Length: 193
Image (cartoon, rainbow, N blue to C red; front, side, top):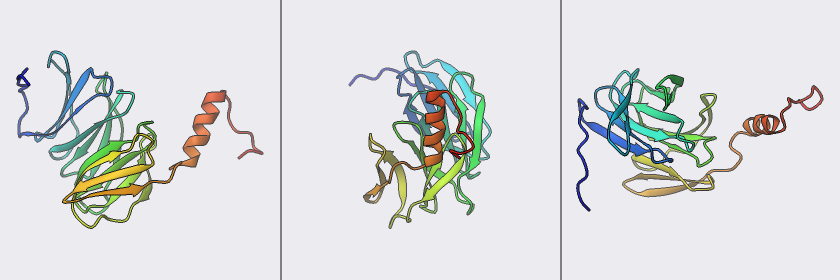
């Protein structure tokens, strides 16, 4: 391939990059405690996302490209930001043991987010609520990357080996009920609760 551009303006190194699913935005995870949103076609800076207590080491877009999840090296926090405005939508502590969050991955439907920290604990979250759904058994080795299969039923973890995890669906039945109620434009009755 041919070199297209060098994107500068990051302090402290760049630890992660991700293209939005719609191809319009490039996100970078910066050692200067920020994530940056750049126009993928021009490289022009669109927004700086701040708020982490240490370097940002992981970035992942929601499937609709509207939300960027960022993982902080020193603050155990996952931050979900609006990719149009840069506004914080939600933040939640994804490590209760004082460990950094190293990697994140959304399911293709955006209903679940996987995280892994320095302790190699893989956790599944409902990103809309910031609620933990479950913790998977810790992999036998370090985990540095996560990816869901297109159907969301398998999670791959990568470190010194690649491990595949069966993830039962649905991961959050209450979320399914909420989605169905929105789709039919009504709430549950007292009898249905």
